[in-house]
Length: 400
Ligand SMILES: [Zn+2]
Image (cartoon, rainbow, N blue to C red; front, side, top):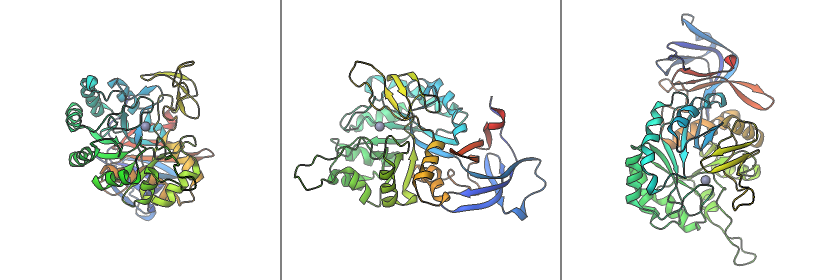
């Protein structure tokens, strides 16, 4: 059951942290789903009828996951009910906004299914879902369930119409034929193009960035090393082009399996804290104990990551996303990066909001959406105590 909007709720005695800046307030007042007011200890309102004692805990904007295929027993494609059910499970991980990421169903013969899925986005009453991330189909390299095809403006328009415009981001590969007009069209539509699944050259990657692709998703993963053709000469490719270009940001799957922590430190050093984003690429089973789960891709075996489970058949053991949740990803980044806390919180929330143009999210500014998480510190990292989306409590650890 969801609760009514918390009108005029005071979250008192907290360390309220603005991503990228630091602790900025000791209390936050929510009204009408927005942040109405915040301030220092000596200005705390005494007349607010509803009040929560934060016990000195950290309060941050909620985490935003731009690349996720599922959570717990739910996957975002192709069943609309699973989208709604998943949205209710995300608050416990401190996640208040996700882009449900679709790949397998991005085929001309399945385009009709997109409309009902898109309708489910506005029915989700937990984490907010401003639009889909389409992982494909204009990609060069396949992965579990991912389609590959040349850039096709006509098919792009069909996808856009079928999704009712609810596409926030689309993954593309720079070396796919006819991709530059697709990138330019995505920018005009307000869809963020994301570079991935690529073996592109430096020049192809630069051309995609010039055309408007300014972010790489699940960076390093499915960005294979270029072949060494002249022994002693280290080849450069899409990874180096992304690292070198200050216009381009990147997200990483910080589970310790998809990307080595040293590679994360390298992209962190190249990009700085404003241009690094945490994403999960989570699949069914994320947040649940290791096991074998039925997904639209077939059986998936989970542990430190999600892998296809088809013993004796091709593809068995192939990586099929992660079992990471955003809070665990944050805990890993706190372990691996020697950055102040406010910079690491920017990697989990404010930076994704900026990439997506969600100006009312990822910040504690007055007037911003009251998407908030009260955290407790544990030996395993930060854990959500209470999570609000648009001022409504969607998770309360005291009720578990
Ligand atoms: Zn992928």
